[in-house]
Length: 283
Image (cartoon, rainbow, N blue to C red; front, side, top):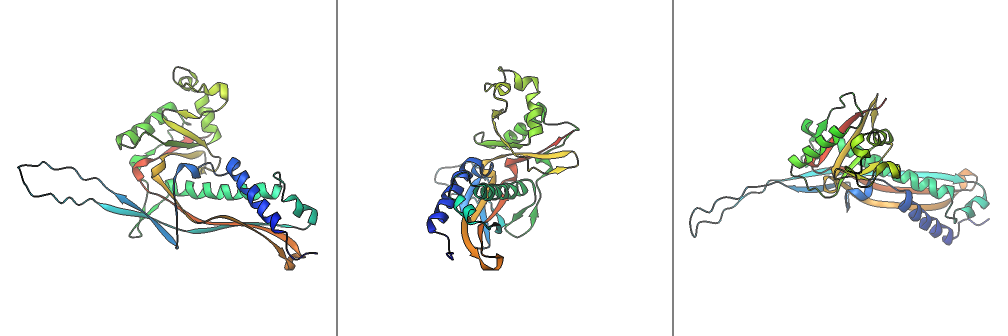
């Protein structure tokens, strides 16, 4: 038996992995700011606002206005996944697009990216000096013993509008029960309120300026689901090494072939004003 798998198998597996990831990959990754990172930590630089001053006379001195500068820091984390394949016929199955190994690996990597982003959205961020920063209370909407209601969406929009957050590229992450809450809301059902006719499609895509992203991985504490709204510039994802694949022979495992995937990444909340936590009761 050959000691290595044909490079064609490896390349085809990688191609299939990318193909699968593009269809069933991370539901959140494309919605946040991403940058390549070298090192154990990465920073997103932040600039505050400074008001203009009145020019009181001709030829007055040029004002020097100090724009406040700060940063958010995140550490890189290693993720990996592996499986062993004993039968040579199964190894050859890796080259098919329907490969269960490719699907399992791709889905595992996608879930890990989403978990990383979800944890960063409403958890503690880290300032440049290393201090933890919790999401302010003013950026949180209480559950009120109710699911996702129209009132909560209006309050979320009001918070973002009040912070002068850009109205473009706003997203709302919610679970399947929250979608059901909205589908049973009279205003959302009505074509007068929602041009996409949510009940006809069986889902909700965009409403009240938010692009809805369904995730079943949102934190559920007792009966409280922690949903959140954000803008693309609110969250940052640093990629130290994107998903890579290796297929090797394992002499220590009766010469089984190991499929191994890994990536290195970190996420942080860049702008608190652009994230709103929305607690929703699930029955």
